[in-house]
Length: 355
Image (cartoon, rainbow, N blue to C red; front, side, top):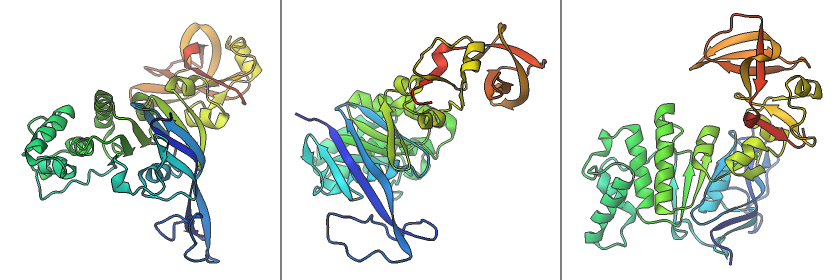
């Protein structure tokens, strides 16, 4: 028996202005109901999600990773029931959700904005979805989920007194209180500063795994996706390019498109691979270099320094490879030399099959 979420050949389309590509209406064009009107001459159909298939097993966290416009939020909204499919199926435990409205899917939703009610306290916000529970049980559930997200004793606190991170924790508690069978998270941490975002990624992962709640998490941040998810689905222009564990994606990207998105900007030529001593890695794949692929080593290959730029916590040194390509070396301080010795960290390279 199929369990959990299954998305099969999902397509989501929008009617857009032919001039600027912006959506002319809120709802996608739907092909399985009678069209309300013909697409006007100044409009066109935009495919936001193009035959995407994936599964989310019980207890699994899957991240949808991609740049802006890749279709990840449109796919999440289709799973939630907020956008109809133009084609394909979305099922839960094998049952088709096409005619199941949003409020009956029992999916928790969390977005970039906490969307808390400012006129009621934290406890009342968290209890908002618990109207079916007896009144004497609601308070216990509220305290339970607030403690779970690290906010014990906050039930009586005013929403206007919360920090951004606390507000998102309350939003998470509110989503979890009704015990959803699936959590849908649309970049809930993207508005927070990096330090707070990194801390809340850990909290989010701990809470979802402690409750055994499966989740689909939309993000454009690779570090966030890799830290949180059991598997990551990389999307671009509505297409699913690859899905796998963080280790699979990092070490074996399925294409140059995936490799470059993940930061492997340089692919070694046979001449480069021989000079750096990695010609033996894989005869059927090319070696992609990422930010941590090169290590300074006086006994390694001598490469000319092209530029040096100070970043947060490191210096980015651009080196010229034998083929003429540039590659990055990260070091603590600027290098006072025209040439530097380097070797490859074999655990920090990608093997790209179709490079």
